Amino acid sequence: MAKSTINKQQLFLEFLSVVTGVLIALMLNSWRENVATSRTLDRVKQTIRTEMNSNTKEVSDALAYHKALIKELYEGRHLIMAIPASEFPVDVNDDTAFEQFLKETVPFMQSTAVTRLELLRNGNERILTLNDQNLRLLVENDTIKLFGVSNLQLRTADVSNRSWEIAQATGMLVEMDLELVDVLNKCYNLNNQYLETSNKAIEMIYKGESGIISVMEDMAYYEQEIIKADSLVLNLIE
Image (cartoon, rainbow, N blue to C red):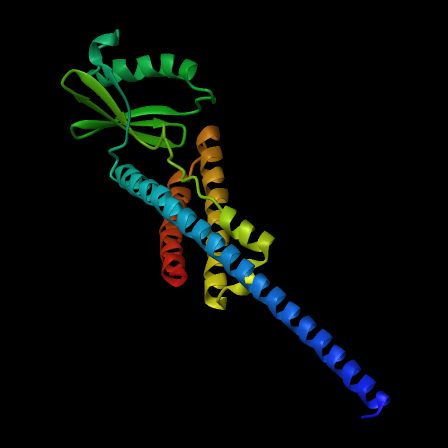
């Protein structure tokens, strides 16, 4: 066999060896990347599961509380305060004397100016009109009870969007099914809308603005939608 033929065969074998080695290296590198991506995706999905379960628990508790509070407000059963009748220097059953007493004392107890104060009899109870608010005033067991849309305490759910932000930061959104990404995005938007509405409600209560029941109903709506969206995410992620 000629020497040139041997050299060509040797060069071909060396070239083939190098190409094979490169291909094997590329395959191993791709395999390692796939394994790393799969592990990262599993960790991100576990973060999503944990967050969805936590958000659902928080929101469910808040929804039950707000539903009960809204019902109380509509039915006029939300107790603002209860004071023993004996603490008043006038007969609380005497409408004229009691109204005059309120006119003399209530303005000093309000952070805003009192422009209107009236006490009207309505059967066994009375309606106290204070500016633009109508409050139920009832005397039971020598105790004066005041009911109305005031002195409200909200229970805003502490919802988190951390899992969405992690999925974005790690690039794992492109590894997920499109339907799952769409629902995760919906959860993200619902959470933000809920927090904005909650902040608005808190500000209205702080400023004593009217219309708080409507905003609380918006909060309850978002709470219901968040629970539905979280449940759908958990179903899709299994």
